[in-house]
Image (tube, rainbow, N blue to C red):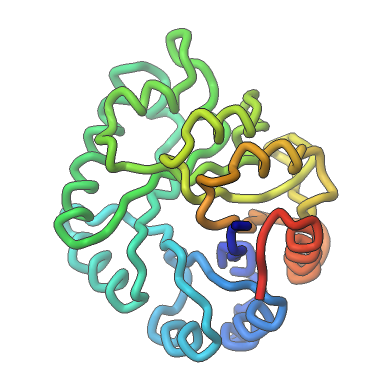
Length: 250
């Protein structure tokens, strides 16, 4: 069955400034999105009733790791959102310069994974352009798999995989069910340039979604920045993905 479509709300962060959060979320629902992915800038208290009333599932939350002084705040936010997937959105690129440094990253993720599992949550890791790149002769994300608990899953950002020099379809096929969430973005292939609506850049979506059949649970649109109107780019992305049958909307 075709996977449902969600939006990473980070894409829309600049639009709801000045008290427009509810208006933006209503527009997301009206477009036909079935889910949302939150991040630290989402006003949880305002968002929770909105998501419920608009029947928007909170697919995952980009979050601090539930460790140290952040532990209770992260767990409380996840409970308020009724969300079961915690996504680590970023580890600094300088942490991926050697096998030893990657192991240290994985040790921290494994520690957070234990807290997540103890509280009925799943931890995922979201890549950028540097995890697909070679470290001591092997892509960093493959080294991560050697050290991570098997319960730590991946949210594969397909565009960043491509920018990082690998074939996203091959990576998605390789990871299989360990990558249930896919970030869908498009652009010119240069990490320093703005993204474009999905379908207007250089990504090969046909091969990607063929590779993801049977393992992708959600297709999540995320456009970090656009030179055009962001709401329009998000709407075009939704229309392209659902119109091509790559994802399922409302």
